[in-house]
Length: 450
Image (tube, rainbow, N blue to C red):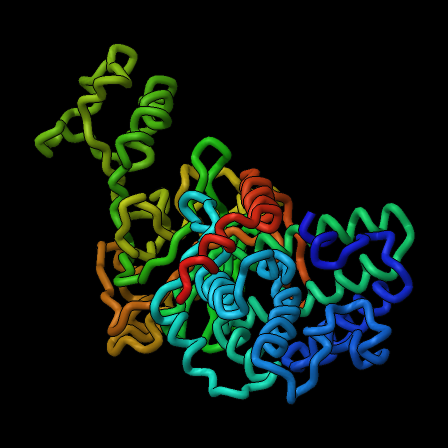
């Protein structure tokens, strides 16, 4: 497992190794930005000739560039990465640093395939070249750290990772160790998910975290509001992606997706044809012409060749509630209100068809439109009261990130560890472990350098 690779000996660390791990955890917990690495802590604790760290790592500021780079790479453990995975036979310091930079900037794995990244882009090669000759360990490490995600979420997870390093190093209780190991793995996977997010974003943005069933509005590094949310059920999982909110629809019509019409509405109308009028649905043929719903024998309608389009008019029964937040995408996923407010009281809220239902949606809409002229609270209330479908286009698009972090900062500043409701963490953890164990890609990368 990665924790054992990062800190050889795992739970059975030697006294010296345990001291190194405790020193790293304490230094990170007190000052996450401190330039000291685990190896530097070890070297400071005893003379080079007695230390367990590699001699090159224990070199001081006047040592060679190679020694400074290897020492800087030891700081990768603070990001949940294994320094040993970059220090392989045949790898040069340049190739190791650039690969580590690639992983901090883009993620160890390709998010679509979970294959490890083994090649660096020109920009990251340029980052290495920009470091001045004669730079010390702190400079090389600072250049690496600057490539990691700058978000407050990433910083919070790094701080918590140091706490779990400390727990793994200092506890001998099997239950405590098992709990710390579980939390540690959630942190490693969640940090990787954050490295996948685009860096080009907006100052005001929304994070929708699936495992904790929350939607968070953020301005800069400040959390503005936190909303209870509902996500897709297990066989209709909400996907992870980033996009930009372009407009909001108040008192929206609901154009029922074809899949929902077949899977949900057809059985509903068969069992209760009166729901069509009661819930204000409109039935159209494929050309868009209105059809008399009372003339339809729903039991004879085929789900496989469903011939109708279904719309629901604005109003108190509308499934989208009073507002929906639109960021047009291929998955047809969006955030919206709901008339079924009682569902937010459930602890397990993976119950939608894939879209995200959010509590206090109108309050969230007021914040989203804060910088859009003509859309103050009074205007929003007036439009909602009219029950007339009205579109509010944002003055500037706002980033939204639909993410899957099973380790996520709670509202009170603690770290929340959520169940892996979709079972996604295991594959990511396995791929991270596989990368740490294999060496061929790094040797190949090193061999291509001139």
